[in-house]
Amino acid sequence: MIDFSTLADDFYVNMNLNTEMALPAARETVLGFFERVQKTYPTMRNFYARESGDFVLEEDKEPGHYRWITIESRRVCSGYVNPPSIAAALEQHRLVLELIPYMLSVSPLDCEALDFMMGFDYAYRGNHDALVAEALGTGPAFEGLLDIPGSLVINFEPALTVCLDETCRQQARLMIETRTNAYHVRRGEFPEDQISVYFTVRQYGSLEPGASFEDTLNQLRQHHERFLQQHVIDQVLRPLAQAISAK
Image 1: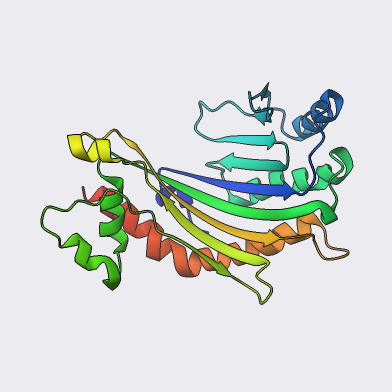
Image 2 (image 1 turned 180 degrees about the vertical axis):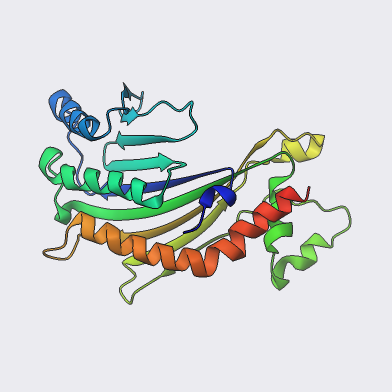
């Protein structure tokens, strides 16, 4: 098993379920759902509502590893930051998916999209975009722009989405997010911030008759694990980590 903590400063394993219809927001329904989750994970004791109307239940963040769950107007999200194993995060996500049909009245017919995502954060004080271009390359079509005298990279966030079946209902997306802006480059002063890599496998649309959210998540996880091993770890994650350590 890969020790993901050696590939990035922080990593997280998330599940997102987007619904076509609005989710219930009644006090009894929301609290009842979170209380049931808390029976399984008693350390999830921080509950609050955001100004946007989203509801959040999470563990304390101070230890550096924590679980969190949110109910938004049309989305339920479950995440685990720096989990001890992928299995521990999947156990949490499956619990959420098992509960929502009964406690939040979400039907497999109501599924707009179901995501399995892993994210990786790299702390770096410097030009994020230039580092990403150096570590991953820009490709022959863009290399000439880097040779322009006096040019500096100020925006390079590669992203790619591919469909995994003929219907385009299953898709995989790799995206890199940087947090350097033109002001930082102009002044030559760079705060330490995160370069983030997100790799997501998504199922669009209502589930097949008889399919469950849990079974669909397992399928997405299997695709995700295979593609992560074959196309992301050595091609993206390790090069970024090596480029940062060399600075």
